[in-house]
Image 1 (cartoon, helix red, strand yellow):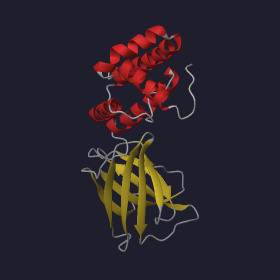
Image 2 (cartoon, helix red, strand yellow):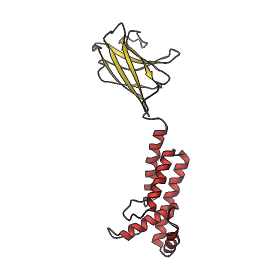
Image 3 (cartoon, one colour):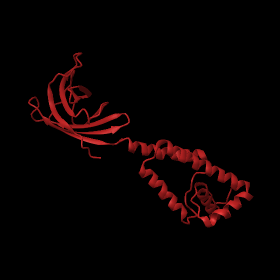
Length: 231
């Protein structure tokens, strides 16, 4: 490994130029001169080889997952910045392992965004004859585990002693899927393993622990998921 003294600005510039040489962004007027230096120095040759391996690994990973346009634009912007003189600039990691970790993080974030994770929907819930004073709202957020549902409801008395509320999602064919139970509706977190874009009807019923897993049909809140989303 090439060693340099702390705050050695010439050494920093040398590392910057080696990184630029490895990824093809070094200015033409410096390229031949630096190549000549590398040819005469085993230490510089080793450092350049590390940079080239890191660049190859990064390009291979990006090609495999098809990085979204925003990520590619960000990488290109960073390359443009590297062309400007900046002796103290952070550069590509000196080892392929460090570069692989950085690429993995960036591509994971890109995949999260491209898969729609974090997408958010809402549902306004209204009262029924069984609970005329009840009202509620739900926020449904897509995660890697499913859809997290944050429910806030008022006008529902607390149930206990084997009695509870249960929330449901239903699709156009009438298929009903339970998404969780609770006793008090003020601050509830539920989970759905089905998409609320397809199961758009949201209801809350009163239930009793009697061994019957089917809905009682005693609805206290009803509403529809707004599938337009909020981003």
